Length: 330
Picture 1 (cartoon, rainbow, N blue to C red):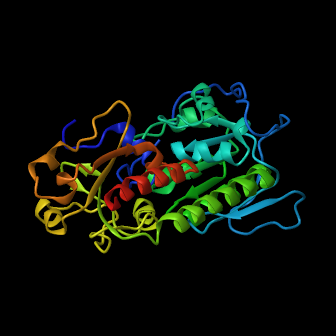
Picture 2: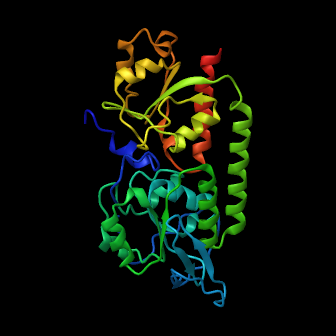
């Protein structure tokens, strides 16, 4: 629909702050066929919640983490039936070594491909709590900004422990991997993945951040024209690439910008993300041939799902972004 981001990009943008409503779908009470993934688990009863406010350090095998809301979550044993209420969280469960524990996902959960066999438990607009409960989860992983507060309260009424995720930096992305691994009992796999993620990010910064600065406008959407401020993870990637965002200091995470304001900054590169089956929506820029980016043909469309997903794939998107920015230096 003209003037609004597509459902796919809003759902994929686990950190784009465009989708701020909720998710869940049908499933039988019996567990679906286990997805063959990065770790093996014996079938068992759901993990009991020992406490959500204070860790019980005397319980055998108790697994305790503090989530991004500041809530302490403690399980008596590793979770075995996990439902993720954001596409990136499903990807993180696999990365942490617990893909075979996943029993339900959100619509547009597409990575890795194994999630396609799992029940869809919602989309960016609604959560069917009855169908979610039928999956008998022993752990819910929730993207706080992607599920409206009223539905989040109702999720707690199901009795399953709820982990709240709000990833806003590479450091919190790595921490989320570690915490998920802790709750699944796959600490070693999760720690290795987190370390690899941080190493790749540091290597990217070392390669690109000290190069000549380039004025970049990141187009989140074209009508209205939207971009990101400095707190957004995409803006953090821009800085790592040596890019300069003229709108870093605006208060909203995803501010709406007037065309006159953008023209005044004369970006050397304009970058946007898009899905494979959708147009890049960069045509409007051709009305301004005086802009450096238009004059030099640097209106660039990248894989929007890589940059939007708060998962290890983000590093791939950031690398592609750095290469796009570097074209202005040649």
